[in-house]
Length: 168
Image (tube, rainbow, N blue to C red):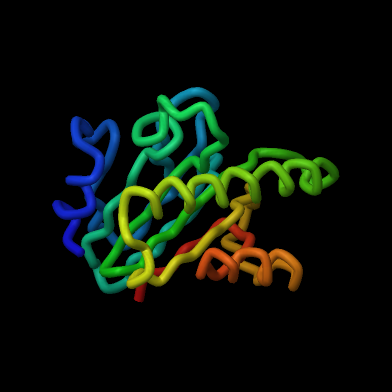
């Protein structure tokens, strides 16, 4: 599915506000409460790093404040798409001692978002990835616990926690 075909399911999205086409090798994103993403440098405060070594075109969707803005349900922050791979990302900017509570909320947000997208697009041919992103000073990715991995398998999604997504 091309970017245009995917975007056709969500009419009236404004480029560079609701979505962006990314094709640089490295991006750092900061989640801003009640706002769209801010692009940062590695030296600044950031929540998610996206590495794009082969300079692929990647579609970055502002999910919470654009696509699902009018939905009353919980929703994840961002959706990232590249060549049949779709990443649902919920960023939580909390101290480690508060992560357990926020993790439960993030799981609900990710699942609701997957269900919403599945109602608009047939995701059965996509590779689906769900990721909770906790802020860290270094680029980290870990698998997440077995119970969450099993839960997300019900949605045909891989699950991880971390602040790094790599496209090779």
